Image (cartoon, rainbow, N blue to C red; front, side, top):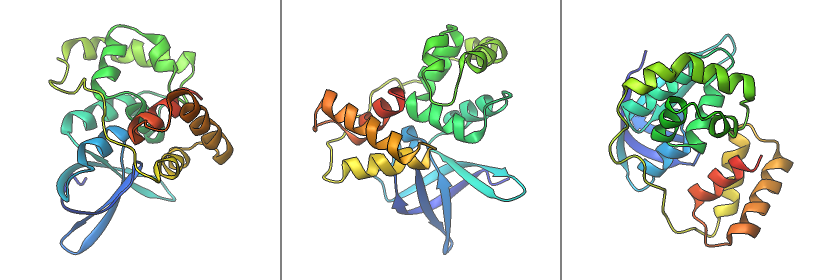
Length: 198
């Protein structure tokens, strides 16, 4: 198990990063929450988790150990794989995930792409007691804020496709959000709203 990687971010994308440590570039899938936390830095420490399957070894990176713990709690639930847990942490920040589970907010959890009513209820049933014991993370209830760049639409599209959206659905959702919210929306908010409009 690789606990963390400390190094230079050579590629930063809303859905993945490449972090170089000791002349080795590690490709790690990340949540939108982590992207927001590390997008302005060159050197960082990523907490990691490796998912091993027969046909692939996938590295996941997190800006904090607490976010990784929420991810691991989610993936412990039958029916929620690493991809769905990552989508959840891109739609909601770790505090919002914990709060929704602790308050038995099925609608919020079910609003995440890939989670149906039965899975949402299973998540709550299996994790509510644990989440009620954990204090909310200080300072992590904030919204993302960053001014949009010229290629915001393309970056949002790439992130949605990486998170498992069909290309046509990603385009449709992005266009709908831009039409409703305007062109001044931040990249993080664009992706969050596009995830929720599916």
